[in-house]
Length: 112
Image (tube, one colour):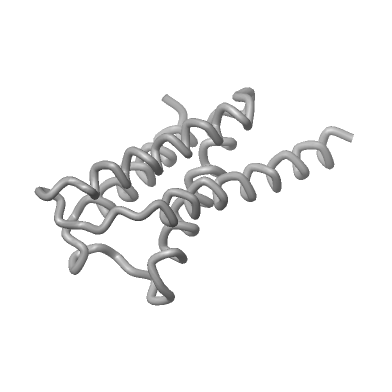
């Protein structure tokens, strides 16, 4: 596996751990829950596009959106003791979408 993919996997593992530990133990950037979601999914989107440069960006977006939904579903479990919110899943998907749109623009600019 390439270094790029290892980096993506490491960030993914961190995001999953942060999302599934009790809320008072979760890392916090200090600017609210949505900022944490946005930062995590922008990082995941950019790293995924970098690690798999031939992947269709829409497929990457679909996978990241599914990941965000799965995280929220797991957070709804009583054993996880976190709050699941539709707005968090929407923030995850929107952040990934905006990041991947930026990636697409950069790719087009460098292709010329």
